[in-house]
Length: 101
Image (cartoon, rainbow, N blue to C red; front, top):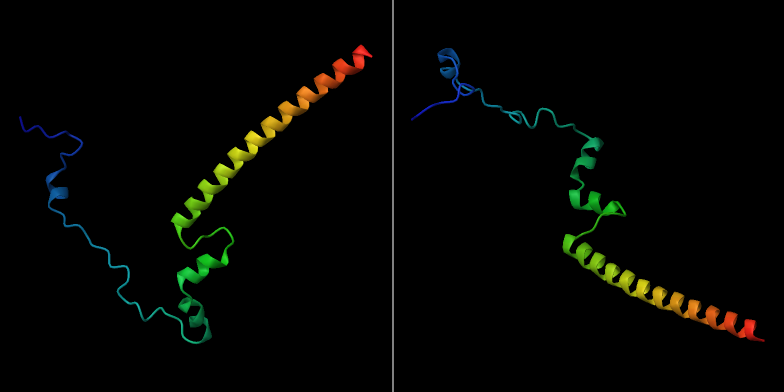
């Protein structure tokens, strides 16, 4: 059972055609500009990435910082929750104390 799906069963004239390969960078030097504009191409990609404030040198460094900030956010949320609970309790006590007087 060597059935070939019809979608892959090409005509004989198409099967015999050779695929053309792409040579994108054959003439590398003929297109390069000369003079002061060539200085811009000498800047390394690392320097370009570091110019942006959102870029990091090391992805692991960024991940560690994210984890640290997430832990800090969680602890601040817990502190905020306990402070709100204390405030609620204090207002309830104050209301009870003022109503009894």
